Length: 378
Ligand code: SAH
Ligand code: SF4
Image (cartoon, rainbow, N blue to C red; front, side):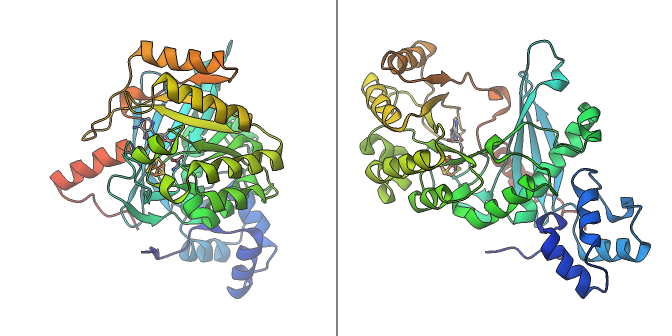
């Protein structure tokens, strides 16, 4: 179900691939470097802005490339300054990009540390039972250009709040987490190509160590990722410390049970010599029992992993319940008592349905009630 847009996204190109197309179009190859200088450090949103390029080249770029493969439709701001962007793709599909601000001592809110959470697919085939993204299944993978375009749109918005950083040509965010809609490792090639663009000196020059990829546990792809030279960080959505519990809420566990997932995670950690994160959503009476905390502690210690506890965020139509604060505290205390470093995310954005896929789901329901969204601008 691949979507073929009218024009390819400029954000899916590299100096090599653009160079080839330039030559085919009768333009010198060296112009590619100038084009990238405009696109990333200088944030040009259309070819017309590239004032040091000849007019015929600007016209050629505008005719042959899409500069906005994703378009920001709306923004929601939560009380705790988490911001959600709903972005529309050229086929009308909706995805989410979340900006999470961690205020820093002594600086204004605009200078707070910004983490951007990006999507990699429309929908998700993995069908975890607590997740809004998987409710309607998988629609399609995002292209390389669509993944990068999401970040470019964030920069355009954040530049307004931080013009000094924009003037230096740096990305206007500090971390990327690939934890939005979709299973990133199921769109492996496009994700890697997109992250390499973000990482490249001619792109955003954004360090691989500031990028965390979250997976529900696609074992062969974890092993493949371990072999990549860049050293992106890895988070594993565990959500169950035994196969029995994990299987109840994560169908992927049938294919890749813990006895395969844990060694794969270990191989990754060994290769990169860096700490993994284990994500664990707390759902009442499903996985928040002390017995689970003890088994989780064994896995976390074996992997030297940090545990990130996320209280379940209510999804309309799903039966699960978020545990009380007392039960959440009891769980984290047990882990810590067993020597595990754990954080309990009193998660940001709860007031705007920040858990993955929820804003999009709500919009799609509205669209069903009100008719389809207007077509994306040409
Ligand atoms: N597919 C990947 C990345 C996207 S989902 C993965 O599963 O890791 C990323 C995270 O969204 C999940 O780990 C989980 O932490 C969070 N999430 C999904 N549904 C949620 C819910 N209802 N409440 C809280 N967090 C949720
Ligand atoms: Fe897909 Fe991740 Fe949601 Fe599971 S939690 S359905 S893998 S997006």
